[in-house]
Image 1 (tube, one colour):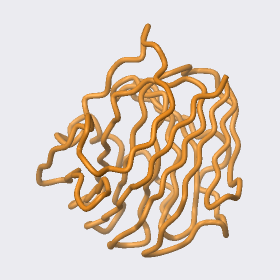
Image 2 (cartoon, rainbow, N blue to C red; image 1 turned 30 degrees about the vertical axis):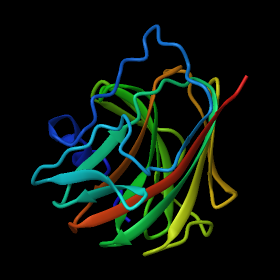
Image 3 (cartoon, rainbow, N blue to C red; image 1 turned 180 degrees about the horizontal axis):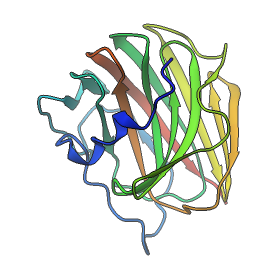
Image 4 (cartoon, one colour; image 1 turned 45 degrees about the vertical axis):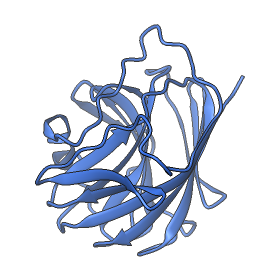
Length: 210
């Protein structure tokens, strides 16, 4: 598992495959949502030499073609406090990778990221206008994560400044941070030192919390 997590995110704003996420300023929260990816819907999908994002065969697929790259798609829906679950499947590629969920996004400038890797690590971090803050320990190993070409059910619960990250029904991390209060939802994947990371996402469910 690579600990140098900053370099590969520098290129985020440059990727054509990045969805144009809406700013959360003044936006009202959306209601409950179940996304089965039977159709592209409002997800922004595109491709270039670095990565591609597509909806096909009932899943949202993120394929990172080049090393040191990340790509995501944003939903265009605003949430503040919520519980989110999604099935994430490593279809192919190296186990030394990263994939997961972005929440409370304000475009590509501010968001929280809940990540796992194919070799069994997890972390929570905040990106804020070029600055990264790891919330807790960086890349914590967890037996709850199914390694390699497998499916993991990711769950994120956000209540005010409190975040709980669970994988396959087991809590792996908890963090406190009050910097970002609401925003869009995104699904992402990234490659470290080996290319061709392919991750499928399916059965995304979001429940707003009071």
